[in-house]
Image (cartoon, rainbow, N blue to C red; front, side):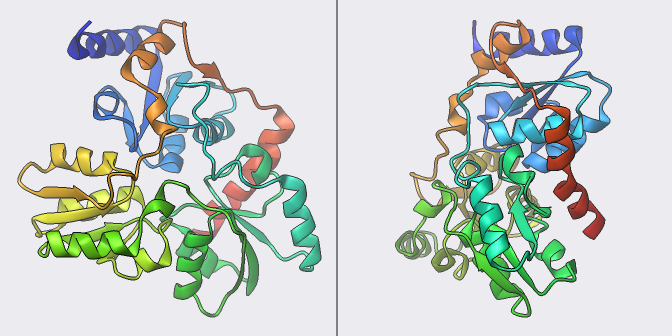
Length: 304
């Protein structure tokens, strides 16, 4: 089958079987084209909860599919590739988090949405990369633990000096590859380009950026900007998607090595196999896990 023929069959099957397809922005463009919704992980889980379809196919990684299941426990949720995990989401052990919280007098634990369901069960508040500043600023507590991404925690801490944030030394192995030397090279090679980076990047990178934001915020900024050239400091698929969306502008990846290999596991034939009932993995979470894991998400929504 050609790519177009495969896409047409996917579109036919998802309509026939009542399946909502979600694609994280780091998926390849041929998958994004057949998705009902594409974007950041938490926004996708909210979209899935609002649609009438009772089966949801998440083209992304495991923690994202878990979040979809938490917000839509009555729906069947399928992860497009069983091996698509997230090293950052899996870095922390729930027992270790509880020990750390106890040693610091029970101060609240703020968990990045990029964490497993099991880890969310022992945390107090969730944040996304776009909401972290707003949510932590709105928390009444002046001292807190932030996990697992030390770079996002550092970025937030510098914006909110009134908060005492205890870091955990974890992070995204994809974004941490980006370096100040690569920023210097990009500025030299593309002097007219704006540098847009994700807050999971090292401080030496975010400090030099023209704009720091989530994947969705980076894409929105680039679309709306009057500038014509951009260096993109996040997963390389974003520069590719923006080149399709804005053919009158130029987009350069900050590094050829900023590739999420877990996201890259899912290919268009995997999506077709899932719709045929021949691939993927159904996400199953027990009622107690869902109830405990969704609490910090609800707290995030309460805080804004």
